[in-house]
Length: 492
Image 1 (cartoon, rainbow, N blue to C red):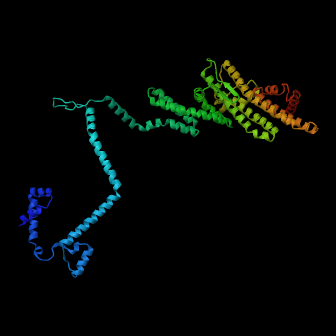
Image 2 (image 1 turned 90 degrees about the vertical axis):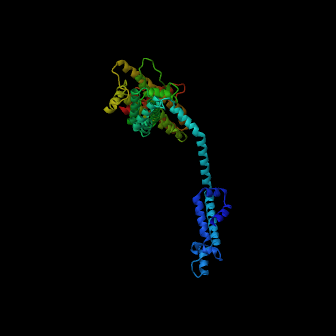
């Protein structure tokens, strides 16, 4: 009976399920037994509504509650129709839940699908290429013998490169320290530790001497030299400010240790250092050695920086011209008297030069022993070299003094007539006042000339030539002699 029922039900199944049922005897036997149990079920033979083995406790709470109320709270088996309806409802709920989850994560699902497609395409397209490349690298050679069927050539260059890389990795800390030398040099310069930056430069030079064929050390040295060139620029700019003698001395100690000649040539297209009207030529004969050239260049840098500083101080006084020109000229001369004397004092102290006058030698020898020992250029035991230095110092200082004296003369020529003619000529008191103001300026100029004469600077001759010995002199010879007599009277 179960065989007939199974054959009848088999006609409504999917063809694949039919083949699977016919090919598997155990599945067929189990199906026949299940149908047999259904046929001999007492509930099925009854005329009541078909029921299942499930009770109303397996149903949803609503159906279980209704069944319990209708049957007095007793458990009752549910019908096949109810169980099928319950299963359909649960399936719909699951489908709705799956649809909502899919909708919430649709972008993720699309991205994953695209990634899988891309990976699949790459595997399909690149797999064979990679296999061929690996075979070429391995250089497979077939052989008739059973020994060494695959023979791989040894790449010596690759082996040596691996050994070198392993050596570098084992000493990676030291390698990084060397590569960080330019950055460390820059950091020392920014913090003002100039001596440490010089030590870094010496270290890189030692590395180049020890390993001349390594390009990496040459690149490190070039970067360090670039940082030192920037340091030289900064130190020269710093000299244009109002620094103390000790600070200026330290700066020139650092500049003397550097290759200042090449640094200056690399940062300037011309062969001279100039600022506005002050120009010093750096050309020298081939007979002069490199150290003498460096000494001369350092002197030029110092005088040029002090000239720039003094002219900046004078330019700061120009707002006084609108209010009181006499005050402007007095302050002008005061600035000259203070800073020119100070500059020449530092010049002889730093470069340890000797002046022909006894006063200048006294100024140079009155410095502390530490300053004398740490002077930049030093003195030569040769008398020829000493004379050359003395002539060079006189020439540079005279150029320095002449440039500043010309500015003072120009200012006096421009503003002193306005001061003298601002008073009425008819009033005797105002004429006396104007003459007194003029004598006051002359006295200041004379004191300035006397202070600079200690350094063998002929400042007085330049001023007198520009003011007294012209067609229309602002200061007559009698005015100058009269005020000079006052200075001698007060002094002696």
